[in-house]
Image (cartoon, rainbow, N blue to C red; front, top):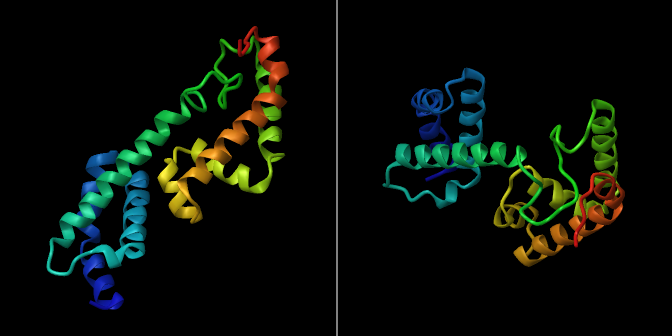
Length: 175
């Protein structure tokens, strides 16, 4: 099947996909984003589709998995950067900082510390922080999964060191 033929078949499923996306998201804007993400993944991985199988089912599976992954990313953003004992949070909750001024400084310093990371560490760390799984990062950046894990570990260690003063001022320690 040529890419043009595949594209034509996928485009025929756009309206049913949008209806399904609306059922999942219950929001027109989010549904449109989900349809676009599904279409992008379908075109990106069209070679993995086996001709003669259920295209609609394949697309619905892509959409459902994308929705679940996006949901997990949203949940992860509302939690710690990782499951280890870090001294910092991305969205510092009010119990960490006593007032808005301190929170603003913490957030600014955290952003500056992340921006100061070497580019390869920053990219990998940021993708992980946005909810991408190790294997997704490895696939996107075309690097081994071990490299992904190492870069994230090193980035966290650097950030922990740079933000140690915040941990001490809030009574947190690694001991």
